[in-house]
Length: 456
Image (tube, rainbow, N blue to C red; front, top):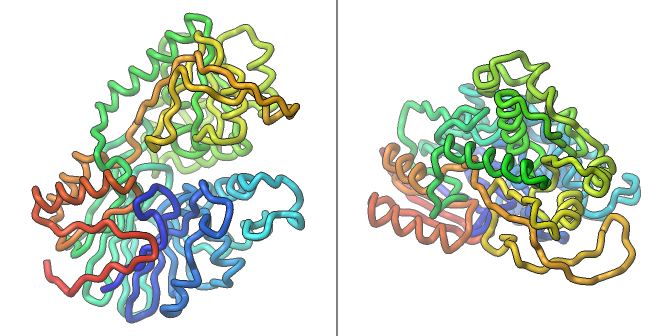
């Protein structure tokens, strides 16, 4: 059995894996790496196609590092075979792909879009080719491949896939959570036989999450302390997943303690995404349980504002507020613009509520460029970060403990680790081999992983 790793190798980004089967190639995820703006942004599809025809694509969830290259595959490379994902993933992917398109820094017309990116028309054409797969359903590919889908937690619509191919059994986790979050259930792995191989994410390869309730209380207490002190709170978030988790938490606490501080949410597709969450809440989330009210009232304290309104609020409002903006990194966009405006006031607070590569951490006392990339004047003076900063991992991925328990429960013949920092995955691989006695590999990009037939 052979697996070609086209991305997410010793990094978080560009998840894309190709199984070589007797039926042809099966692709698992089709993501991009947002840190690049050249050909390295996308998987090397030419390399994959050199090994045979692509028979099917399975997408685990809507995040850009798992779906962002799909329009390149279908519209640039001409793939017109079956593409499988959940219904929420298809609807949410439109807005994710639209954001990826704008991330190239060209907000012009389709005709002027940078070569190598894609257009609105191509996004729509790509997603029109998608076939919907429901959880706990089996999809056949040819005569020898069966793919069973299961809820993965992590984000609305996320799936993991159990693949029976040429007498092998492979479990691809995608990104998953083993325990429930505030608004999502954990992964539901219900399979008849243990897998021979687990292809697993390892985002939190060496991290242990705090208890969910402790983390939620710490988040709320930090936000409230800042607001009561007259400060402003900025949470850079990814538009889908983390944002809805935090909005739900804030909504609940604001209702419980009768707070009136403005909660501002500013993304290009904020209204549409909240509507999609409400639409699929019954079957895919815990919202009806934790919010104890009907979907139309879940977000009534949330003010969805245009980016210009949020920037005005930063400059002109004396009232303390908490704002969730995109992107989740502070490398560009609205989050960076807002951060530059609040960073010099020690009353304010920056909360990074998700996994952050160690090289991307921001701390009080760091320097940053003061110039405003929204009202560009060319000034390049440096400022000091005086606001408080926090990094809170809300646990939308399995941590070290979760992964080791998961591996020891299923006892596969071998494990392949992807979607994490290289040195940390190397450490986890050594632990797996020494403590569990299971061979564990951490492949490099564009490397084949081969294993012999083994029975469980």
